[in-house]
Image (cartoon, rainbow, N blue to C red; front, side, top):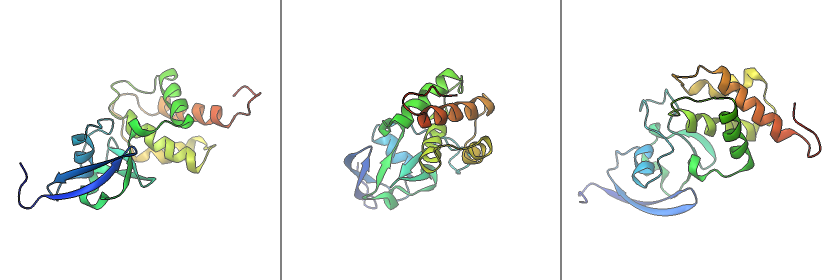
Length: 165
């Protein structure tokens, strides 16, 4: 049921333009999930954990800190909408390195790593740790996550006839 103060707007999530009618106080994470995209997680709702991390017009964004209406006509990319070779390598590396346990933080970690590797294809350990410092993991610690991102970066930067590291 639409309330008199609700607003309607268009938003593009993972390349699909959608109409939405929401309470203007709704957060971007809420509308993303209401539209059926559940890879971005609702965590702390204060921007501390990073579970809700998405790309908003190609900018790394914690979607719990953004009002949904401010993303009108924007392009939102969640983990489900990322299909690059970088994403595939990161997912493979996370599995190979056992860089997750419960998986709650994983989509936010991978989105953060995607953004890092786009900006810096060959980060060192300190740069990786700095990049993921806004994402919390309560299960694995961070060594396996850092190792997974480093492995993915190494494989992505390897020349076609060269075996990575």
